[in-house]
Image 1 (cartoon, rainbow, N blue to C red):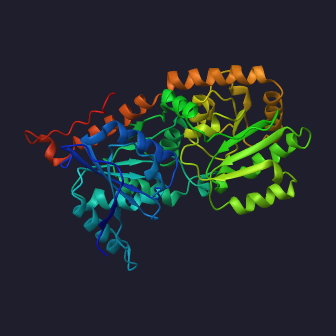
Image 2 (cartoon, helix red, strand yellow):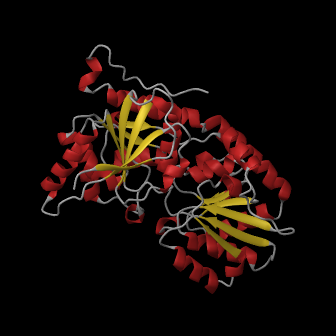
Length: 408
């Protein structure tokens, strides 16, 4: 089956933008809403009409199109059906698709797209850039050696690897076996002022009832997010204080099981599952406390977004979460399996509105100072510049490859 453009994202092309400066192919395991898709939306928005984006979602999901700002040039490409008669046949099919796109740069994301990274390195006509934003529950305790070997094969010694956290930097060098010289550290970031405007303008916040204490969580409902841990900790405070309510924004394969767990804990009437939320900022801006109970994270956007809305956070101490919050919030980031400490943190913040305001405002200032979206965009564009410099076209006179993010 030939790859083909199946639909154009519904974003107007500015006048004169029919021939964009760069054609960038992005291969995602899924283009559902998540952290790496949020990063893409920021980068694409900054590049504006200077680049044309082709997106391949290997699972066919494209909900993240809703996050793209107006003016982004984005087409969704239907991936080819890959043959089942061996890895070489699969790589040849991917090669044909890559060549037909005519991309200036091939960007692959996470383990699910690693085969495309390999095919592009071996057979592609454009340079590549690979990003890893984390790993699944099967690699939480220890890396899978076969995956580490395949990552090294796919990237070789030439494809830069972009990671968003110091934790993943360590994993990439110590466990996956990459030299530091091949890694590009690009911390996640958010636009605090834009988030504040969306919170002020939107009507999508949580409806408050009386003197409730509302706990909010933004996370896909997958096993590694361990929302059952959050439900248990919430039950410990909610059964002793009827003011508590939990609101969860996110969906996924764990939803049915989590609803059963809430029922078993006798808190189902206190828990609201919102499903997928395109923009979680209004919800976060209307809760009292944000929470995250994951077994594994790197630098989650939900933590940065809760900080941008000036909310305190209770979370497990995984990935770089401790560094994403202010020093005043760090005592409420607890060891992953210390549920008693998680409950104690909820109790302390729930019982002190002044402390919640103080910690939340410090988080807002911390995110604005250290995790600005502009810094993330600049770092990612620098990695793309570096990759593009290896293109055969880079030395041709008159060919402009330099990426310059648009400034407003």
